[in-house]
Every structure is written in structure tokens, then in C-alpha cells.
Amino acid sequence: MGACNTITTMKSLNLDSIRESLIRQEDTIIFSLIERSKFPINSPVYSPSLVSTLPSSKSLLHFIVQQSEAIQSQVGRYGSPEEHPFFPDNLPSSVLPQYNHPQILHPTAAAININETIWDMYVNQLLPLFTTEGDDGNYVPTATSDLQCLQAISRRIHYGKFVAEVKYRDAPEDYGPAIRAQDRDALMELLTFEKVEEMLKRRVEKKARVFAQEVSLNDMDKREKYKIDPCLLPRLYGEWIMPLTKLVEVEYLLKRLD
Amino acid sequence: MGACNTITTMKSLNLDSIRESLIRQEDTIIFSLIERSKFPINSPVYSPSLVSTLPSSKSLLHFIVQQSEAIQSQVGRYGSPEEHPFFPDNLPSSVLPQYNHPQILHPTAAAININETIWDMYVNQLLPLFTTEGDDGNYVPTATSDLQCLQAISRRIHYGKFVAEVKYRDAPEDYGPAIRAQDRDALMELLTFEKVEEMLKRRVEKKARVFAQEVSLNDMDKREKYKIDPCLLPRLYGEWIMPLTKLVEVEYLLKRLD
Image 1 (cartoon, rainbow over the protein chains, first blue to last red):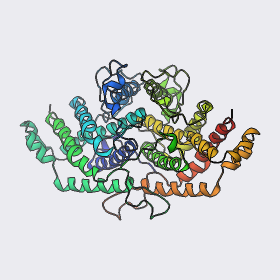
Image 2: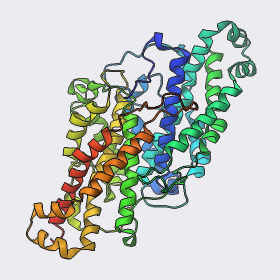
Image 3: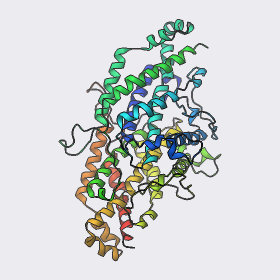
Image 4: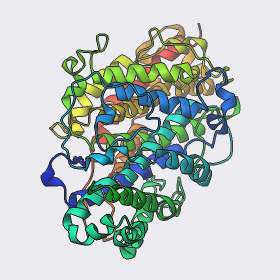
């Protein structure tokens, strides 16, 4: 049965708990992409013309994400250090009593938000890779599916803050000099483990082969038919998720000693 | 790659296309339950005390679902005959040009909405079966996960309208007399195929065994560990989804000749 994958105590902040959460988040990302792939690209969702009657919105996706974030912000979503809005400007504050999230990260972490980059990557580069051409009119379910994908990918990438914190705590003597020298390249090198990255890419491909398969009672049926191409996953991780996570880690570490 | 599973033309309304959509929706339901199981039950999400500062809301879940539906309604979600709101009263109308959804169902279909029953089943009966005890403070992600589950289950059950329509069109001579006699029992009998239901239960259990497994590069690792108990799925379908779908089918057919 389900295990909670949230950092709830200082004690649980170690590389094992971080790794467990990152691994679980892989499943979430794969599920969300599979769900988005039910619909064709539905390009009107990303264009201003469909929402010309909604003056402040650039697209239906923009409207759905911004409005959903506003609702969720009112009830405290962004009080969690694991959550990052795509539209942080003018978000309503929470009307609920504040949940006491443990203070694990350095306070400067709150200022790091690369969702603009993630949005651009998702809409312009990733989406065309795993959706079919076409328009079936299911614009709102498409946009809410996109919201799930965007939130899952954003959460995974910004989790780099926790990764960086635990790595720093495990070896402050290694990271300290590079931080004091504000040396991005040295930090990037310290944070890069090619073998681990290769293993991760193999794992997400394997997961996609499992989760994206067509399952039927007859094992000979539809074998080797996938809802999304499993090779999309190592590419998504190799080209975008891992580099952007490391970018977050570097940004975090640069201010870790402020 | 993704196939569109939406009824877009009259021509595509046949038992095969319906079956394909229902089978694909099984995956969606299983994914959504797996995602919800990441969090413990988080009971404050369902209680009025957490949202006492939001006067019109009965719970955080109520707030998230009602507000999300209002946003999505503004951009046309409920113009689709496949979508059914949980809070249909006072939903804002769409500000977008209306998408021309094909008119497949009898016009009385629009009045059939059993989401109140589905909500009660989900919150009071299903949730405790697949979530662990506990409270991790992730209330908003929990409620948005619930929204995904509720929408997936609701869509599946209300798809009974299309199932009933295609069954009626295939054999009006079988259904006509029972409809004219307004004989619920006779309709229920005509709509019940025990062998098909047993096969469906076996299929969703098999799917859950695939999708809920822990996948790692080492095949000996974590084998037979599931994120949700695969036996939950035949139970969910046998006790709730199939009976409620048939209820929708009967309600639809009773007015099919109006």
C-alpha cells in the first residue's frame, strides 16, 4: 500500500529518503505523460486565438494553470517547500491555518523557481514528441492533463533543492570552497555522476516499458504496443530533467552559505 | 503513441469504439488511484474544521472540486456529453466559442448525473481501502489527486449513456418493450452479462498488478510489492463501477423513447 514520500522530519532528510522520493516521482511523471497522450496535440489549447474572450490569458493552458494555482494557493499549496507555482505573481495568500512544514532548506531556496524554463520546454519541445497530430475538441481535459505533467516535472526538478542540501550536509568540506568561490563549473562537476545518470535513464525507460504497455487478458494480444514510446523517457531525463535539476542544485548551493 | 479515445463522429459509435474507450479508462482509473496512494488518508481534507474560514465549503476537497469545476466550466468542459460536474448548481457558463460535439445521445441524457452517489462511495468507502492512516500535511496535492480519481471514475460510470445508446441501436426490438413498460428489472437483465463482468474484473486486477508494481533495474528487487493492492480493482469494479454504470444505462434507456 501507499507510502508517504514527503520529507516530514529533519531525521528523514538523507540520500535514501531523497532517492526514494525521486524514484517514486518517476512513476508520477510517466503516468502523467501516458494520460496526456490520450489526446492528440490539440494545438488550440496553446494559442491565444481560442481565448481571445479571456483578455488576460495567453492560452487556454495559461488560463487553466493560472486559475488552478490561484485556487490551490488560497488553501495553502505553496506553503510547502516542494511546490512551485508557474505564475507566482499576485497569487492569493492562504486563508487556512499554516501547516508547520519543517524548515529544512536554506531560506534563500524560496527564491529559486525555474518554471518559466520548464513551461517552455514542455510546450515547445516535449509535447510534440509524444502526442499525435489532430484536434478532438477535448481542450479542457487536455489542459488539465498538461497541468498534471507540468506540476510533476516541476516538482521533480525543484526537488534538486533537497538533493543539494543533503549533498552539502554530507560533505560540506567538498562543497564549501566552490561555494565561497561562487564557482558554478566546480559545483556542476561535484554534482555530476555519469554512472548514476545512465542508470537512471535505463530505469525510466524500463518503467515506461512496463507502465505504457497495453495490458490485456490474452498475453499474445497487442504485445509491444506502447501508449508512449519508452525511449521518450531517457531523452526527457537526459536532455531536460537532469540538467535542469542540476541547475537548481547549483543555484541553491551558490547561496547556501549566505 | 496515443490514440484518441473520444467519440467524435456518429460513425465511430459502435461497441468496439466504446469498448476501446472503456478499456483505456481503466488505465486512467488505476493510475489515479496509485497517485492518490502516495499520500496517507489525510483526513482533515474531508472535514469542515480545516476550512472553517471558507464559509461556503464543507471540506477542502469540496472547495478544490467546486472551484476547479467552476474554472473548467468557464472554458467549456461541461459542453462535452462525456463530462459531468460534481457541483452542477450555479456553474458559470462557457465564455469560449462552443465546440461542436456530435449529438449522439438522446437529449434527456443531460439530466442524468449520479455524481453525488459517486462522491459518497469514493470518500466514505473506497478511500479507506487503499490509503494508509496518517497525516503528512500535503492537503492540496491530496485533494487534487482525489479530483483526478473522482473525475476518472465519474467519466467511466457516466459512459454508460453511450454504452446504452449503442446497445439500444443494435437491438431496438429487444429493448423497446422493456422501455415502453418502464421495466427497470427487465432492462437490468438485458444489460447484464456475467461472463463479461468476470472478465473485466480479471483484466483490471491484471492491469493493477502491472501498473502498481515497483519497477527497478534489478529484477529481484522489490518483486511482489505493489503501490496499491491489485485486488482493490476487481472490488471497485464489481461493487461500485459496474453496478453504477448499469444504473446510468437503465436511467438512460427509461427515457430513450421520450
